[in-house]
Structures are given as C-alpha cells and as structure tokens.
Length: 230
Image (cartoon, rainbow, N blue to C red):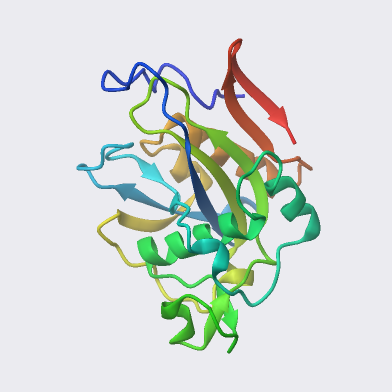
C-alpha cells in the first residue's frame, strides 16, 4: 500500500515553527460507470495556488460556516453521520454539504435532487434542486502533516455519478480546476497527483473491486504517520 504522505511531499520551508491548526475541508470523488471501465472526475489545480499547485485532484475545499445551515433534499445514512462526527467540531452534514458546494463551484455540476425545500444553496434553489446526501459514502479522513504552511482536516466522500448528479451535463473548467475530465483509474494513477490523492484513489479502486473497507483515517502522531480504519 502506498503512503498517504511521503517524500513526494517534503516539509514546507514557509511553514511556521508552531504547527497550524488544520482547517476543516471536504472532497467529493464522483465515479461514472462500473468495473474496469469506471471513471473518476479530476481536474488540475492552478499553478498560482499555494497549496498543491499544478496537481490533479478531486473537487473539494474548505468547509464554510454557512454549510451546516444549508437545506438538503435528504439525509446522510446514520452510520455515515456517526463516523463523520467522531472528534469533529461540526455536524456531519456540514462536511457533505461543503463537498457538494465545492464540487458545484469548481466543476459546475449539481450533486442534487429535484426539491423545493427552503434554504438550499441559491444556485441549487434557482434550478428547483437541493443537495442530495443519501447517495454519498464517507470513505476517508486525512489530516495534513505538520511543517506545512497550510493544513487541512479533510473528509472524503464517494458518490456514483448516476445516483447523485441531477443531469449528465459535462463538467466545466473554472478558476480553481482546469482540464476537468473523467479519467479511468489507470489514467488517474498516471497523472501528477499529490501522494494523499494517490492513496485515496487506491482506496476507490479497491472499493470498486468489491473489497469491503471501513473509512481510513490518515494523520500524524508523535510516533509518526498513522493509518487506521474507523
């Protein structure tokens, strides 16, 4: 198994002497198709980004304070919610809603269902939509190591495009992500990926192959890197 953080991610020379507190973040891995032909949606981060410039990643970003208050068409599964709230400061739905919002902002895609519920994200509500949480599966949590100028405590969700996208529209490049495409898993592994993204992509490969995996928790301890199952 590959390491989530390794020599490909050297310490940041601009990192403060006292490690920063990680910021909550959320990522969504959309999968289209099944079996060996399955594809994942990924894009390239802009070269001007201070965090992982020019790397291919899944859509995602920081959790905003407003995310937990947004309305959704449905709820997370109880087990998903329980695992998300372990050692968390926010409600489970905040992470899922952040992942969906970031996916919309970075790709133009709506992970949503038809709904007239009040309080949905304005871009969703304008189209008679609300985010759908039920199809999402929480598969990983990863905390950026110390000695970095930016640190995140990221939750990763997996969703089948056929189940959670409201339409089959094509993703559109944005200021955040370019070269947005559906890549086969082999094509994905051939991209310039951060080591944590490569690790998560292997988790996705195993799940699509039918391996029953608990969500993985990646973090650093005084003894070094830890990889546990939740």
